[in-house]
Length: 353
Image 1 (cartoon, one colour):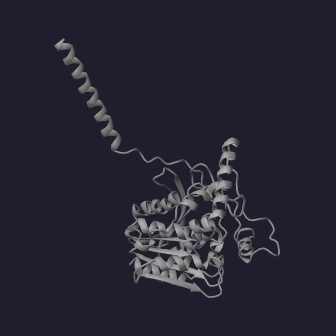
Image 2 (cartoon, one colour):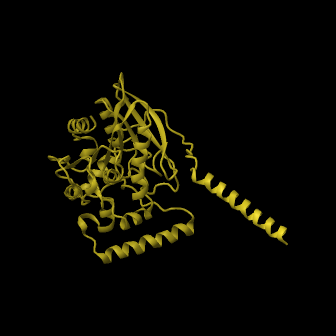
Image 3 (cartoon, helix red, strand yellow):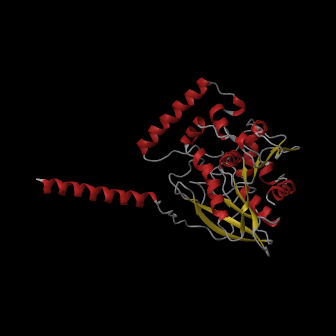
């Protein structure tokens, strides 16, 4: 009997040791796997290719396992380790549009830059397609910093980010969390949480918001029954004469030769209808008052969205924060027509020195 009890105890100890070993192996971490992406190699941007920088396609993975695609721009004849900037946006756009123009132009001015497609969009991976998330899309910026920090040509202590439109809010949220980001620019910023929860100019009541949530949750049921995610639709193929001016401005960019791109959500089918749910319930800019590093917020004087930037700026603290209003500019003018590149260059050179 004693031998039997001893055998059972020894077996239990052995099992415990095996379990402990398995646990020890598991907590060492899981491998960071990359999705295999098919990337377009020819130049297919809405802006001409510059001759002052070298361009290449790169990929990196965020901590949710989504592999992101980016265009890297490096100044020709650059020497030593460079300051680097990660660029993304506008919300519903791709890197072949405004973010690529920003990235190429800043590379021409001496920075190593990447313009990336956010998770689930453009050439980046992830499923389901065409969905946005305040958490995942904030993480996309930090994943870009991961990538830049490990590049031989980059000074890891001199990394900044730049977000356009809805990705301006993501950039501020990332800067509030990621202390490696030494300087942040938010250009023609949207607060995606605020606009989804409250409507434009905070016109929605609590009752309005409840009805919206009812509609979106009914859509979830419909999507699950159908086995596919219904798209909200991008901009219309024609704009009514009595449409709001900002809709006409969006149309003039996304639906014309100026900015149309076949992979752009805004130019085509739009986001999944249910993408708004997480933004309604998760305020993006809750902690931006804790950003210690430098921030430049830029907006157009005539932009319908100007209040997003002005109100966000009021939350920022410290003498290294600045709000710049561009006279006469509307929201989309800051996509390509009236971008204050001299100011942006000066800002990054000051705080990424």
